[in-house]
Image 1 (cartoon, rainbow, N blue to C red):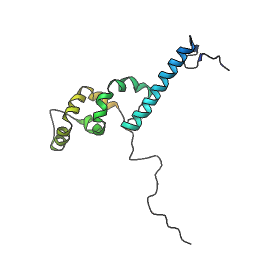
Image 2: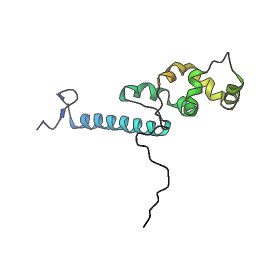
Image 3: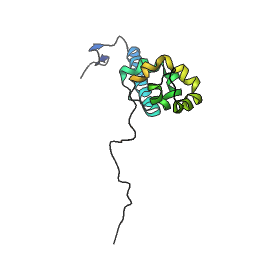
Image 4: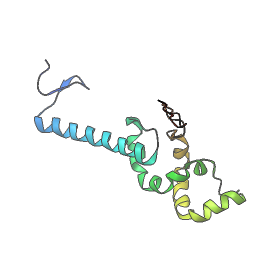
Length: 127
């Protein structure tokens, strides 16, 4: 059994119990935020994405529902279909233009194709 203040991630010992609790709190907070962001905004996030996503969360929470539109949006070439979306969300879109390249790297979770598909036909029971 490892010592009480052993850090299995680095293979070293923590300096104190308070440091161990602080590291654990930070790690748990990161995991909770990632889980919430996956569920709420529908992006496939990992611990490597945490810092960058956390930096841009204020912008992303306003445009996550038009993610596909933002990935292909060009302000100089707006078609008729895109104009309606742009007019409804122009403030959020203009705020998100500086991070458009980062938005292209985010992968949405595919909710249309669940891992388990259920048969929607009615169940008929005969006696």
